[in-house]
Amino acid sequence: MKGKLFIVSGPSGVGKNTILNRVVAGRENVQYSISATSRAKRPGEIDGKSYFFVTREQFEAMLQQGELLEYAEYVGNYYGTPLKPIEQATQAGIDVVMDLDVVGALKIRKRVENAVLVFVAAPSFDVIRQRLIHRGDVAPDVMESRLERARWECEQAGEYDYIIINDSVERATQELMAIMTAEKCKTMERIHIVKEEL
Ligand code: 5GP
Image 1 (cartoon, rainbow, N blue to C red):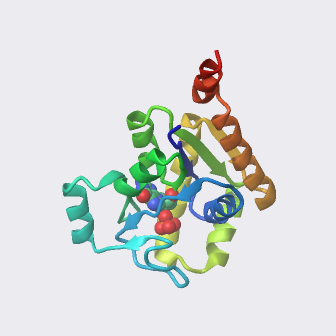
Image 2: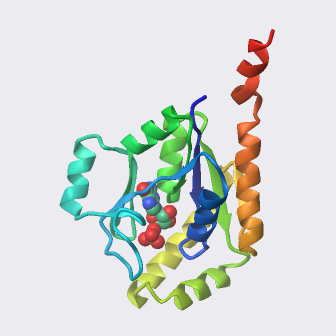
């Protein structure tokens, strides 16, 4: 059985990374998709782990050579999903979790039939603002653009299959795991097992 794509979106600062790290650590047969980006590395980020950090020119070359499954521009920087690791994982039956903006998520929805789209929201918009300020790794001039983009992203949440409210990291992580488990139990995923028995 091929692995499935689970796309997780949500406003900057909502805590997607924490949830995804926990899901990857706590669940078997799941891999995190490491994106390429032209944005500068933040303190604590590791090249090849958090992202593949590339120049705009390198990103554009990847794009032209068809190496990306999707890409988007987010607050002045490119972000894109390398295709090859996803093909390899899904062929090997491994599920892939991806942290994508809304534009990228909706592109994947059109291209990959059974991809699952999950939106992570904060309990309130003020929580997002506070988290971004406290995280301290976003420059003040970028902050307003990110908040504006976050507001627009929340308006698109109705396009998603599931919504998780991140008021508790534990619960949000459990909910994402539950969604993944339920999706793997869907009839279309398992009917062949039942039929093989007949
Ligand atoms: P950040 O700069 O905070 O790490 O990420 C900014 C936004 O880019 C987030 O909303 C994140 O979901 C999105 N993002 C990260 N990687 C990708 C990607 O490969 N493709 C797309 N479309 N968005 C991405």
